[in-house]
Amino acid sequence: MAIPSKRPRSESRSPSPSSKKQKPVPTTRFLILSDTHSHKLATYPAADVLLHCGDLTDDGSPSSIRSALLELSKAPCPLKLVIAGNHEISLDATYWASEGGAESQHAEARSLVFGANSLAAELGITFLSEGTHTFSLEHGAEFKVYASPFTPRHGSSAFQYQSKEDRFNASENTPAWSENVSTEPSRIPDGVDIVMTHGPPQYILDGTGDGRSAGCEHLRRAVARVKPRLHCFGHIHGGYGAQRIEFTGAEGEEDGMKPLEKEWVGKNQAKRKGFSCLSPESLERWSRGGQMLCVNVTIMDAEGEATNMPWVVDMELPARG
Image (cartoon, one colour):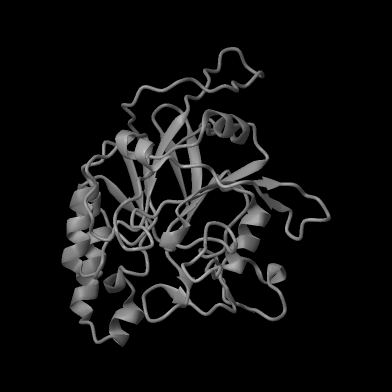
């Protein structure tokens, strides 16, 4: 699907040398956020693509989902991609039923987000089911995104799995102590540009207030295998920020991923601008390749206050084939 884009952009730094007739693909701007929990942002920066990594709501009711969709529709982004989080409980049929929720309310919630006649579609929002999706933008770029709302079980909530269960890899990539429960949609395939999950991979922006690492080791193994350019997530409010991961391929690194220093975020400056972003130096180095940018984009902080800003990431994408 071709998506119109109205934001002025700079041209790509790396036009293809193979054809003088081919125009360089402009840089694509992503506005990325998560864990808004029914909070309304003061402003939404303009971007080509909005990515919301789940927990739009606090109570997960159909009425809250409706309100959250109406709020997101204000963002000046031609393409808006959204996934559920563990708080969107009325969208998880199994969990909703286990809590005594009415089947009619689950059906109502799904009708709000999925289908050509849904409220989401009416508002120009694409609610992604678990799996891999490809999008073409009007300025000529194309990207492939893997999306999943699932997180390791912690307490009682929606879209969860046992920590021993690997849903992101094929059985040959699952260790003997784990149980492979993957399906064709849930496995992260090679060739994706962006991985968009509700929760983080293990040891990357996943620290909790009590010092635990709450990320998923199976998800980490999957992104180490796939090597996406960008992995965005939320869920762990104390992990807000950005970190570049270098793919070393070195024998000394257990999974070939070397975490670099966490990106510095000036919170006052971010509040003035309405977003956080990489420094020019970090952006330039990441754009050269060989690294994955991970961003934990929780708007709610560890105290449950909406003090964090969304992230803006400018990314060079391949031309539409």
